[in-house]
Length: 269
Length: 318
Image (cartoon, rainbow over all chains, first blue to last red; front, side, top):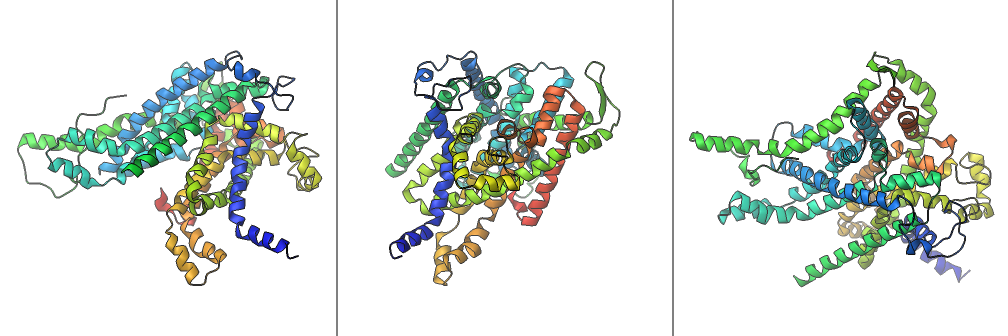
């Protein structure tokens, strides 16, 4: 078959690319479904089967009871958790990257452990502690838990950045009679900033999307992921898909804008 | 949260270096203060971890050997048999967790490697866009995306239809992966969901380690008459091992403790150990059993991870 041979050859040559794009499709497919079904008008309470096109949900995104409230709560939690975890995590990261001290190994392992622990284990144990202490579950218990598990990710991100920094830059600043404070604010911090920023972004995403730990430590407080979880039992409003799609779009735009700005800055140098 | 200490970190030479000659008390006090800087930096974060991560673990260990009731309160009675009872009753869920998580991890590696490879070596100017496409799904709540699989795998849906036309459903039914003419509420659906949810955790470390490989090594291998596959087997894959190890850990650990996929995509026959912990804790309110199970899960995972890291010889990864 002379016609088929080139095709077969082409497929064999590009097998990796085809497989890679297949995986990408597998990753994107649910987002496409979420997008398409945000225009659905389901018959029953569940939005799993396609019925007919409608923009009702998009024109009234907060039309479901309690959903936008839970969304605001999640955003608020994510902001505070990010601030808390970034401040505490950056301090630990600087200590680990910059200083030799006793118990350095122990500190590193303690920071690593929460990332190597299944979420359900951390969630159940923290909730056990709160229960025994008689703490009321709610906003504060969730916030404490979120800061706890975001902390390690910030440390990892910032530490990597600070370790790869050229120490001679700070020495140069000091040679030029900068005080330690000036050196820190004008040299060290700006160089560490990308690491701190990526740690903060990661914290925000992790906290905003966390379900398992929140599920155990929220009491009757409902965050957005918990609202979605509950709706899987009670009936899924189309508005969930609207929020999901909007979040996806905002994220893609932000990342693309960031990359664009980054590459333009690089080119202008 | 305490404010960061006033003394700021100086260069790495500040604490290292030879011992200095005795100095005036003021200078010595300054040196002591400088030596304390790392401890001040560590204090608030470490306290947070000790109080809200370590203490709960200890507390949980003690809860697992307590007996009592919600009304009368729980007391430590060294009731070790909670562990035996929990294992005897829930060992299927335990084994299932390990099995599902291992399968999902293998699938993630199989699916993730080509994509990481393409992004690292073949994408050219599309690299940034592909990276964005890998990360972006993260920003839609993972619960919403998992619910989308309910649509994709639904009984009248395209996947069931395609598998049916190819008569693959009979095959998977025979192996025990699916049941009858359904995919939803079967092991296949749960493993598919697990694989999907943790795939980015595999791709990102793989990509990081692949990207570091010097492209000239490939050329060198080809110059030495290695065929593409040999180049991959002898050069690329061994060099990407840190990524493979990190990726498998980042996939396996959360997958083994997961209960969302089993709850949303599975039936009662696909429950994993996470589901048991969740229902014991939040519904049955049997805290000792929940504590014993999560303690067992933690120990099992830490043991497996330690062995795995030793075997793969990448201890410096941590």
